Length: 161
Image 1 (cartoon, rainbow, N blue to C red):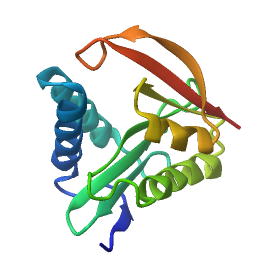
Image 2: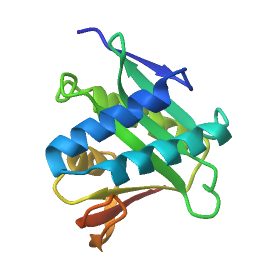
Image 3: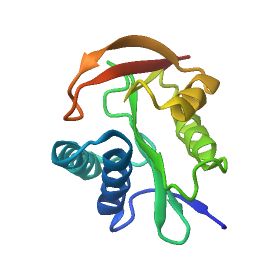
């Protein structure tokens, strides 16, 4: 295993990031079509308006794309930068790749002096939550919700500078 992290859009990344999310969350939480379509459409929209150095896309190659994290800085001055689509393949989980991805995304946020970075997730993803908290994120909101196509305990984490 010799994964490499690259920055920026790469052809095929929309499909691969969507596939990683769809497969993982279908198996682990029973998410289906609504979730996959949401990831694909919102990720496509983000990529259309992606501006390097305002936004960030980091991809893990091993040699195929096996992980990602995205920082959407388009509304950073009003609402904060949005950390999204953070995932690694099963084979890379637990090897420190997620920590490297988050470090790169937050380094961009810090370099751009974004005052707040936030993310949406849901209860039960303890390994991810541990990473978020290690990087200074705090749980600021929790409530049942359906934005992923199934009722889960949605959580919003924020990291303020």
